[in-house]
Amino acid sequence: MKIICIGRNYSEHAKELKNEIPDKPVVFLKPQTALLKDNKPFYYPEWTKDLHYETELVLKVCKQGKYIDEKFARKYFDEVTVGIDFTARDLQSQQKTKGLPWEIAKAFDNSAVIGEFRKATIDGDNGINFSMNLNGIEVQKGNTNETLFSFEKIIAYASQFFTLQTGDLIFTGTPAGVGAVKIGDRLEGFLESEKVFDFEVK
Image 1 (cartoon, helix red, strand yellow):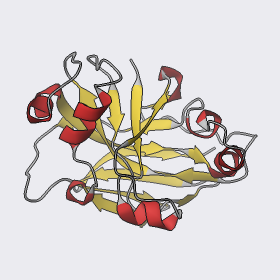
Image 2 (image 1 turned 90 degrees about the horizontal axis):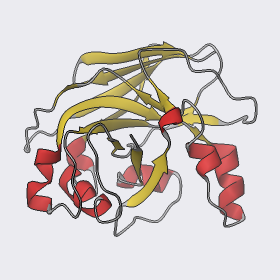
Image 3 (image 1 turned 90 degrees about the vertical axis):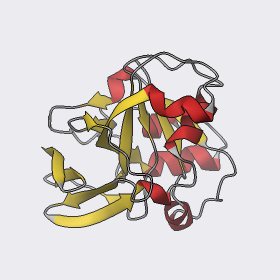
Image 4 (image 1 turned 180 degrees about the vertical axis):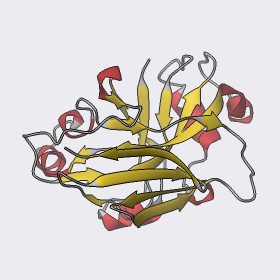
């Protein structure tokens, strides 16, 4: 199982980090050891002082595929949830400045939080709403219609490079509103109005 992540898929988030708006999906990977589920606590790593949450809609791949045509891409996922792409922003900035890969800032253990999955029922007109509360206050919200690249475009693009396999996860990008967490924080994720994760930072 692999975790495919899409960066800069919401223009407002790209702007808040002063990144260019991409003309193709920005793709990076996380290993299976990055997965954190079942509302288990997240333990703040000792090697960062600027850890950020990035709330994302996550797809679960339901069948194997390679070079998937965009018009058939919807058949390759059947469940969705809300997740967090934790990012050590200080390490990421250091690596970027040096022109080095930044997996150590994105792909570390427990950096890919996922909530409970739900059947994917997608209304093309209304999209899917998702949000996250930090200590009871809503800090991020998004709708999948706001993405630069649709789920279908992401699947078609990523499958050119990586064979998609059953159980793979695709983090589809974060809207504006990312921010830092600290020990003692409580994070709650919502798919529409349903809570799908609820955990603490320790």
